[in-house]
Every structure is written in C-alpha cells, then in structure tokens.
Amino acid sequence: MKKLINDPQDVVAESLEGFAAAHADLVAVHADPPFVTRAGGAVPGKVGLVSGGGSGHEPLHAGFVGVGMLDAAVPGAVFTSPTPDQIAPALQAADGGKGVLAIVKNYTGDVLNFETGAELAEADGVTVRSVVVDDDVAVENSLYTAGRRGVAGTVCVEKIAGAAAERGGDLDAVAAVAERVIANVRSMGVALTACTVPHAGRPSFDLPEDEIEIGIGIHGEPGRRRIPLAGADEITEMLLTPVVDDLGLSGGEQVLLFVNGMGGTPASELYVVYRRARALLSERGVEVTRSLVGNYVTSLEMQGASVTVLRLDDELTALWDAPVHTTALRW
Amino acid sequence: MTLDVAWAVDWVRACARTVAEHRDELVELDRQIGDGDHGENLNRGFRAVVAKLDALDAPPAQIGDVLKLVATTLMSTVGGAAGPLYGTAFLRASRATAVSELDSGGVVALLEAALEGIVVRGKATTGEKTMVDAWTPATEAAVAAADGGAGPADVLAAAARAATDGAQATIPLVATKGRASYLGERSAGHLDPGARSTELLLAAAAQAAA
Image (cartoon, helix red, strand yellow):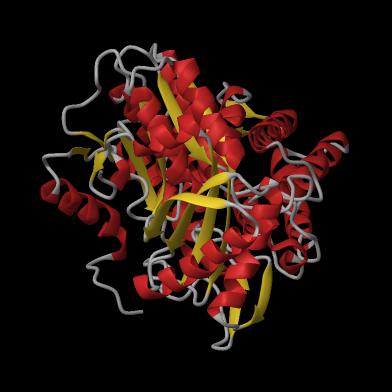
C-alpha cells in the first residue's frame, strides 16, 4: 500500500484540517465531533440541508457545502457511516429555524445512524425530515437485498434540493423536490480496479488484471457480476442500458447526463464514456440538455466510473442551473 | 450463584481484548463480503469503552450501568451498521439489568433484550446472514439451559456455544440484509463478520463468568 498518509487513524481528521484551512472562506469545520458547516453557519429562515456518510468519497459530501447546496456535511471514518453524536449536532447547526432535510444514501449504516441522529436532534427541538437516495440500478430489488444503494445520483439530489431551499421553499416543499429527483435519477457503475482502505492495508477486493466488476457501489464493495475487460463503448452500453430502461425513458424526453469518476480514472477516459453514453441516448431520441463529467463521488483511488441519468423537467432544470458556490461545484 | 457488577466489567474488558485480538480476522471476513471495516470499527469502539471504564472513580452500582456505558460509547464511536446494532443491543440489555446481581433468569432477560434490540434496529430475521443468526440460537440455548436449572455461568456457556454454531451456519447462506446482500449468490461460502463478532462477545461473557 502506497498512500500519502501519516497514521491511518489520522487520515480523516488531518484531511478535514487541511480542508478547513484551504477553504476558510466557504466552510467551517467542527473538530469534535467532526462535521462541516457553511462558513457563516445556518441561514436564518432557510431550510437546512445536511448530508453525510463515510469518508473516502470526496468531494462528496463536504465538497458540496456552500451556497445553493448543503448547510452541513457529516464525514464518518473511511467508508464507515458517521455516528449519531456527529449527525445530531450537524443537524442542529444547519437549522435556520425552518427545519432540516437530511439526505441519506441507502446504505444500512448510513440509514441506521441518521435515524438515531435525527431522533436525538428532534429531542432537542429540531424538525428533521429525511430522504433516502437509492439510484443504483445494479441492485435489482429490495426483496433479497438491503435495497438499491445511493450512489452518484446523490449529487443531483443535493444540488437541486439545495437550490429549492435557497429560493425559500419550506421543509415540505424542499423534501418533495428531493423525492422527485430521487424518483427520476438512476445510476450504474463499473470498477476496473479495487481500492485500498488505509486501515485495511490491502485492496477491498481481488480483481484479476483482465476482469472488471459491473454494478459496483461506492464503498469498494464488489459488484454483482464480474466480466472480462471490454472496450469503453461496450462497457458504457452495459452501464447506460439498465439505467435508461429502469427510468423508462422515451423519445423526446430531456435528461441530465452525469459521468462520474471513481477516483482513479483520468478525465480523458470519463469523456470517452460520456461520448458513447450521449450517442446512445441520442439514438433513443433522448435529448441531453445538461451534463456533468468528473470525480464527484469517488471510492478513494479506485479506477472506474458510473453513469447517472436524471430525467429533467423545466423546474428541475431551473433548480440545477441555479447558482451554487461550494468547493467542488460552482456556477 | 449469581453474576455481579464485577462480572459485567470483566465481560466488557474481555470483549475489548478479544476484539483487539481478532481485529484483523474481522477486517478480512468483512473485506470478503462487505467493505472491510468491521474489525477496525469494533476495535475503535471497545478501546473507547475501556478508556471510559478506566476513567471511572468507582465501579457502577448496577450491571445495567456498565452495559449502558458500553451502549452509548459504541453508538458514538463505531459508526457503520455495527455501531447502532451493538449499541442498541447493549442499551436494551442495560434496561433489562437495572440490578446488582443476575441469576439465570436475569442472564436470559439480558440476552433476550439484546436480541430484540438488534432485530428492531436492523429489521432483520434469521436466515439473512447477519448477527441475528448467532444471537437467536444463543438466546434460545440460554432459555433452554435456564429452564433446565443451569446456573448463570452455564447459561452463558450454552449461549456462547450456540452462537459459535450459529455463526458457522451463516457460511453457506446467501445474504439478504446488509452490505453483503449486494453480492447475491457470491456471498455464500463466507462466514458473516457480524455473526463472528457476536460469537466473540458471547464467548467473552462466558469466560468472564467461568
């Protein structure tokens, strides 16, 4: 294992110290328990937005704290959900008096800890609503699994719900927008290599040089299928087809196409994927009106990518276009 | 014969020792079908528990106080799924043990409360390849032993043996709860890390009582 770390135990804390120092104009970092807020704290009269999860997915979530997106983010240990005693004060810190929306990815640990954290914050007088993001079509149903995972689509939920909160929507309205994004966003990912969690010291799964994992989540867990390495166009089709089918997209619809890097794949390759995904959508008569390409929801140094499609309407498009100023997303 | 607060403290310290000794094994089991943090997370949690025990001026008056300290510390330091699950287990167990001594019936009540907490929090049932598959037979074995007139130490020993069998029985199962469920059929052939840590914690309880 070669990593730019000191002690594996200190990675998250030292990373947050650097993040705080580098972006003091945008964020404030609370050290004990660790959570990140906007530099100015909660905005009075605005619904607060909080998300969180294991570290190792940067810039998710702390990179999306700022105007037009999140009010607070709660980082756990690497690939481990945060604890309720981090989540509760973060929910409190994000409350501008109109309640807080918690955006939770559907992973067992995240859901359990956010449930408990929300209960603690509510006991202290904060109104909390939670939405659970489950955009990963690789997980076919919840009958035999813990349900679809929340992956890259989370960025779309945070951005659009963030804009809805910023324009003054109340908690019900912001939650409704978030639910609408969740209902209309789907993703599927592929891993070319595994990643190494600092404290584990060896790769999260063993993947032969000539094989890839289709249908991965974002925690370094193996996917549903292992197949021989193929060309980018073929892999892109394997990712996009189930996404489009699950959304039930038909000709004439407008979408946001988001190609996300897992951390170890160069931008050039992400654009190769984007190129093919866009062509495939075009063949089906689906119009890509908004795009995002880059490393936004990563798995440490894992090589791979995910393809996310969000069905757009005029309102969602306007909310996506609304100004955002965070360390990782800005326009 | 009964178990007292000193037993509870010994149990907790034994948990910390056994989790530290098996940290790498739990990480490896979790790496195979989860995300490889179970041993690291539990070790971090129980190290914090021991630090809090060491900082106490005097041992708590009731067994439940010891278990509540474990519960709150695990919830605030472990994270993942194991933090809320074990935290809730110890919290429910602490409510069932607001006494200074446990007889066999008290041990059964402790285990039943812990199991109920895990089931409620995790919404899991047996056969899903989770820690419930170790806790359930352990609790059943404790009930049977207590009904048969065994003392509390023997009740715990029976529970620990059943937890071992239950954990081993998770190996062929296909996971339908938790992170391992995403592997589908590929999760078969692996020992569930949560069932394995349950086995370790209950073995520690039995050792502390022996």
